Length: 346
Image 1 (tube, rainbow, N blue to C red):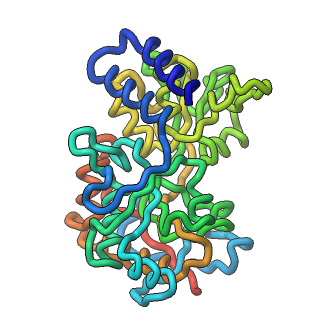
Image 2 (image 1 turned 180 degrees about the horizontal axis):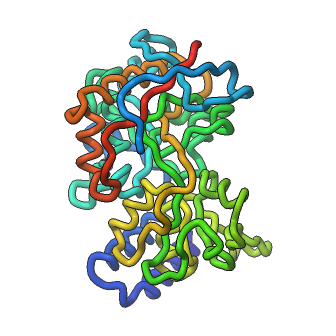
């Protein structure tokens, strides 16, 4: 604990000169990234080309034979053991982020957790429990999203979590509710031009357990992106961090040259700091966010998929579109609809 407090003071000292809104945002980010712990609050006091409408069908057997990980169970309103447990408790326990601007972040004015993912959590709670505030929010780091489900700490994880085959072997996913992709975030004055050879020799930060790290493992273009551990702990968590926001802090401190992350998250970070920008014309991957549950929680997956049917419906006035306009349109303009759902047989 002492080491973290000392680090925070040191970081604050190096931030002199940023000033204004940016400096305030950086200081808040430093504090959040260095002191984040799993938190729990209940109810209203909680800290609080894309494809168009339609349905696609895919065949998938076991996760071990994963071919199309975005294919999920058909929607259903039927109760089951997991739904019954939530109703008996009277609260939906959701693993979320509290540091991702516009997705899941704590509003400094009212201390409520807000954002696009948070709106979706409340829609699930309203469907199951009849009350959008019947939620226990638990803030979790990026690298603990799977673990908190496996350990039964939360019912769902709604935290910009990409659906892929590796994760589908560990948890169950709803249909996709957002399309995104990996992109490079760097200072505007940087010579980095995108996910290309301009990364050679550059220090690149990613979140532990993220698809961004996996992408760099496959093709790094000579970037330095893995921590070198010398046994003293001095170099740990410098390039590969528990929480994605930590990367923005390191970028602002000059400790790394670039960040690779989902463009949806990077757009929010660019909105927080006008000195950085997305590099490259478009994402270099195509990925989809899903609501994750414990593996085999089929009744809960089917219920979330039913919620998503209604969430997508209504065209320009759908809950999805209204939430997108409120939180994301300024940084990710031009989206007209969520991804079409894909279903598989049980």
